[in-house]
Length: 160
Image 1 (cartoon, one colour):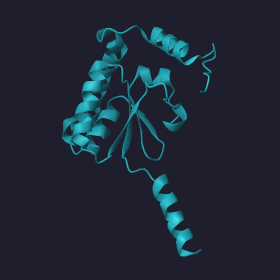
Image 2 (image 1 turned 180 degrees about the horizontal axis):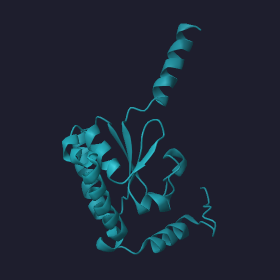
Image 3 (image 1 turned 45 degrees about the horizontal axis):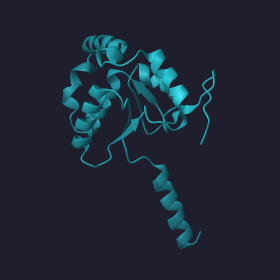
Image 4 (image 1 turned 135 degrees about the horizontal axis):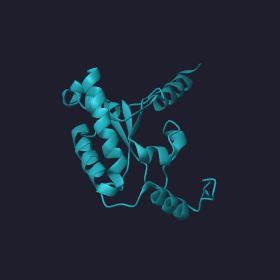
């Protein structure tokens, strides 16, 4: 392999390797979620430790995000690790905060009893998140998205 071929090969490897430690799939139309994301982006300070992916964007692509479809992502917070592993619920927050050097915030949730309590509380929040933020229910949000994107009854959307 010539030097230029080696350099090209190394560039491709670098491009394929994730610079981020976790992708955070968040709802960009949720005011409380945006507040948290803005805080986390400031803490990241441009380092790229966390890759922020807005699931509410019309360009959201499940295949690029661990196969997590829009409906699933809207139901609970999800994260994707560089190896493709999908995580959800409080584990996402714990991993994001650890990546940003603030792991102490969620460290107690590593203990089984506290982790179970935190997940229980998060489940309640997730179930009522849309209502508490003044938004329509999940079914309506999904229907509105499908109409906006020109999707059929099976969820297949036109590609522009």
